[in-house]
Length: 470
Ligand code: ADP
Image 1 (tube, rainbow, N blue to C red):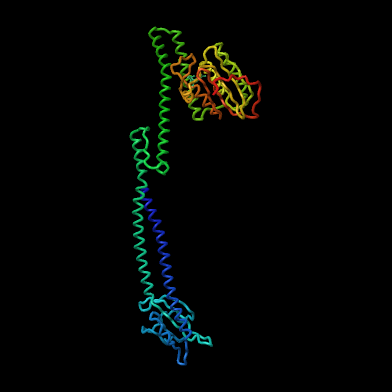
Image 2: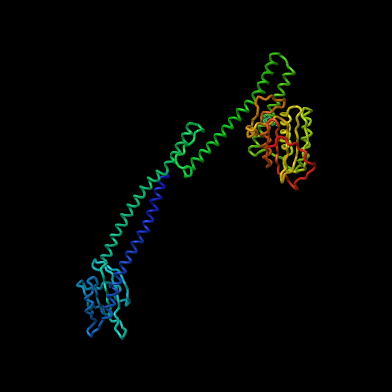
């Protein structure tokens, strides 16, 4: 069943229930009040008779006043032997309510008397001062007007209710259609996007953005945008990977071709093949680490480690790496303990150091420092290199991103994955990687890691070079 039909049905069903309850209440109240009125009339008449009641030796006599009663009240007086003593109607001589005649109790009842619907009040006649029951009077009033009123009300309620429900269903049906129309438009637009296979399309917002449908459209469009970005990132990633693999593969194939033509193995070609294969292996490994880290599935051998010892180790290795081309310095050297994977953290620091060494021109300097800042340990790698333009900074941690794609690379030149990997490894350690740079002055990368245990202490005064301050 469609939502529209369901809404209409619910609407009509609820209205029917309400009308039914209302109708029953009105009907019952009206009936009750009409019967009460008749009962009151009967009661007044009974009181008058009771007060004027006289008993004569020959029997019980209806007082003359009773005959003055309104024609709508019929009276019968019966003696205890069951004989009709007197009555003010000329109908058949049967008690109005035979069942209650001998009960000796005052009671109201509804009876059918010769096809007339009657309300009957049975009342015992008590002789005073003896206090003995000498007979029974029965007063009756026809319920014809009550019945007619009830019937008319019933017809009115039923026909009115039916019309109201039908009208409500009709209004509900059209209102639901109007309310659901924007949803149909959204569905149609979504189907068009699917058919066209074009994620760049958006559903136009026709109503207010805050309405239910407006919010749905906004949310849907946001999802589309995210999907589009995701597919675009994937597409770019695949293109970048293919591009990065193509260069070493071309070199390998070229060298193999050369050797085939020469008909012999060539040491230089073999060296080139080996180095390109290594490069491809590194690339594939990097991609694997990156995808694992990005999805939070990078296996980490976490243990509590002395970050200062690790920094010293990286410092020593970096000195070897820099040879005498750039000066590698040790800046502030606090002591800090962190929870983490030693090899992965070393990979991050070495990556930052090798970048700094690589991009800093000969004669420049690279400073490695470790400082405690509150609950955090901050490792900084500062260089006096060319710096990174401000507009490039937001992209620096993206996969395969290189500031200057045509920049001549040294032998170890990466594919633009190093910083992404460093970023994600740091994030896997609940830390963060920041960069500050000024073109022409230098760059500072900061690795922030949460300290573990008792925190850290100063070892040496700050001698960290302040380069590329933000
Ligand atoms: P790559 O393998 O190209 O070094 P990275 O992800 O490590 O890839 O770095 C991305 C880009 O960021 C580099 O291509 C380079 O342009 C820039 N970069 C990284 N570190 C520095 C630095 N210390 N100084 C200047 N530019 C840097």
